[in-house]
Amino acid sequence: MAPPVRPPAPPAPRRIGANWIYIPRLGLSQPVGWYGDCLGRSAVPRWGTWRWSCAGANNTYIMAHNPGTFTPILGLRAGDVVQYGDPSGRVHTYHVSYTTIVSNTQIWPLGATGVSSLTLQTCWTWDGSRDFIVRAVEG
Image 1 (tube, rainbow, N blue to C red):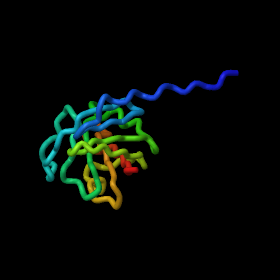
Image 2: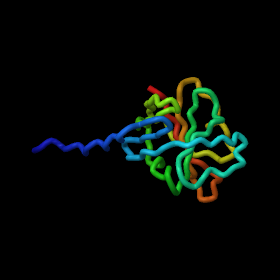
Image 3: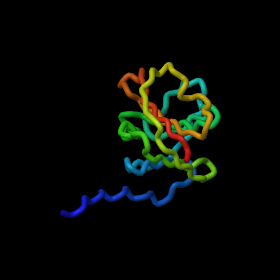
Image 4: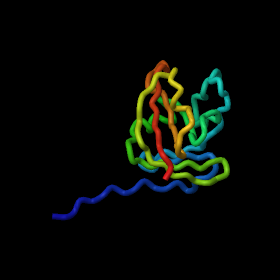
């Protein structure tokens, strides 16, 4: 009996540069723009992926819509790899620790973290009252 054949790994993007997110298992590769409204009064644009510049220390916070750009992150699970090219072009590799669902009034996902972390956010409900959160740790 022949050994089982592993599926091929997703192709690497041509380049992960500054302000770029790549999730190999999901094949998601997107530029990341800046969202600077620290009060959260401005709507997040319907298209694209956005880094919220107001998150706490050690917490790179990236958000996008579901349905839309970030719908695939609903499939992330513990251990998955996420790469992010920071504004200087340095690529950081993170491993998903957990996912959770929060009310949009909960602000702990935005807070500082003790270690270099990446937080991904997308809508869980159609009305935006609940969010799907992914927390990943660098290393």
